[in-house]
Amino acid sequence: MSFEKPWGNYLLEKIVETTAPETISFWPQTIAWQLLFILLVLFIIKKGYQSWKTYQANAYRREALCWLSQCSLSNEEDVRQLPALLRKTALLACQVNNNNHLTQSAELVITRRDEITQLSGNAWVIWLDAHCTKTIFSHQATALSSPLSPELLLNKLAYIAHIDLLDDKFNKALELLCQQITLWIKYHELPKNQLPSDLGGQP
Image 1 (cartoon, one colour):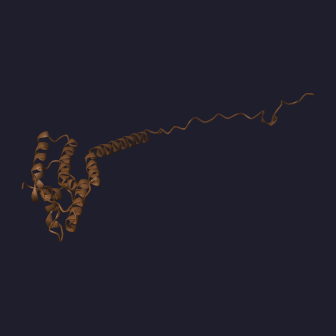
Image 2 (image 1 turned 90 degrees about the vertical axis):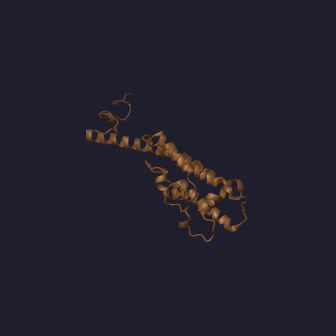
Image 3 (image 1 turned 60 degrees about the vertical axis):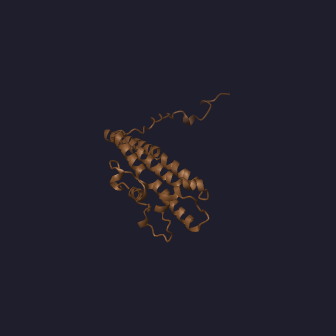
């Protein structure tokens, strides 16, 4: 027994297989779009680099906030360290600010650090408030019924002979001071070409 047609569907004999299209390229075809694409890539790289630099520069803020979050207001030793934490953060901010602006001289940085170290009393809290719009360390800007204002507490905390952590007024003032320190660490900004004495003066 024989078949007149080959085995299979003879209706498909004359069908010609089409050639598959080439892979579609995502690269722009015109020069204008190519230039725009390159500029977009460069812009994304630049923004990514700037974000990374900002993240690196703010490491001292994260460390200070981490310490502050672990600080116990019921621990006298931790409480006495609050003024030192704020001072150290200001000094580190000065150093980081200089590293981000290489046009500044090392002599200027040393001068800034020396002046920050020497600031005390009213001049210190004025300097703090001048470099952060969200804080109210100065006594004049604080409407407290308690005589323990953030200004007084910040300047006297390390030297108080005995800290009564059971005193409600003291604890409220301490909580307010911690809030102000937290705000300053998060939002302070140091000017690029300005000495501390320009905004706070010497005591």
